Image 1: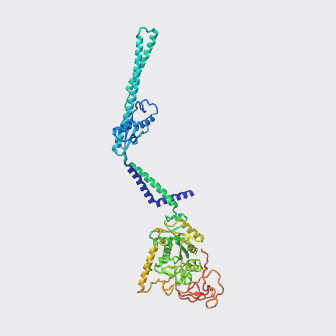
Image 2: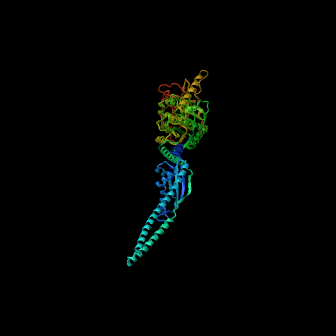
Image 3: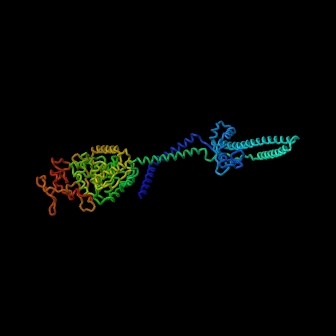
Length: 637
């Protein structure tokens, strides 16, 4: 099973490398193919013509009538004779060539088809006419060379026989003359008679050999196929070298593609995260990311990818209330568009949603980029209450803006006021979405530790595997639960993670400021602009809705009464109140809850030594009016 998985992973790796580098493969194939064809054309076009010769066994040649030796070897020897200097010199004379013998021989190629008496002579030249003439000339010259060689051998043999005949005839004449003399003895005469008979027999034999050689067939063979141009020649070299160049280019491209893919750690495909064992919650295509809201009157556009993300989140988490942290994997990719899109999607599905903005990006996306709203910074600094800061961009959705950011704000993400704020929001709304900095940083880890689940945001072709692994390791370090990853396409590494450039944001903010300055002369300021007389005045108040499954509807945000929150730890039996009397404990059955002190005006400066409480007022007693209905440190289900 593991072998099958490894093979599947290797196949996926190779196919992905080829798909991502398809353009490189095409370019290298075309360039190398063109280079090969160019080299062939630069060397010039070459044409080849061939002629076929049927050999006849011939005396005085390797292929002889007596058939001695291996005839296949003899035919190979005959093929080698075609390109010898004797044949080449005859071709040079016939064609009146000015080339050297070696150069002429380099143009000819001879082949002997298996088990045949045929030789195929091919000649290559710069034109088809010269190739035909050269092939025909070599064929004719070779046959003439074989015939001359055969005649030369037979003539030499006949000459030797004739010399032998003349010598034998002289000996025969001498013996005859000696036998005719009268002084020859009888014994000598008998010897001479035998000698004369032997010489006569030898002379007859020589005569027979002469007749045999004279009657020998001296036909060297014939051209059975006259020289003709071979089909496909001329541009064949260009085609062959061009094809070889294409193959070489593709092989080089494949090697480079595999090497680049092996050393490139970026996530080039959305489903690369699933290959690493992490769930892919959604994919936001190019141009589908949530954009900056130009004004508070413009409707918020919710694209289909965010609806799919909403479905993945709702089906992948427990029943509300749920706190989700949406954060990026690296500094170059912000999670604000995905946090805003998820929040709008959940709100339009009927859930009550609260967004806590710790980066300032969500406020610009949902509330418009031209206004500055007080928010989390003022809340954690103790100069405003949560009820004064929530802004409602549309039904079922409230936003807690970042406010005027300060380093102290991010340092208090794990403080008790922050935990109390999240507890109140969870009590009022189904989903609390925390939009924070990258998960690998300290602030991102702190925010992730406060959530029930974390959604990471990455960019296809920008985020690396290393960044994803570092982010998941950081979440494991703070015991945060990773729900999955949202991948965004079409984000350039040179652009901000918000999906729109910072320069475009600044231009939009300057336009909004100019519109506001022009409007101040003839009418009142914008309903969401920060007024001069207080932090919360003039800001649209959010009206929370009851969470599903409950009957108690939370009050309007700008009222002074809120559901009480009981701390998990024990409370002192008595604590001094503003009037110097001990503070009342939690309300019990049969007892009415103590009345809350009157709230101070929003934005007013608190008295010295006063502490922020969970209500809309200030008290010198840090434990006053902090009763809760559920402990803040309750374990997560």
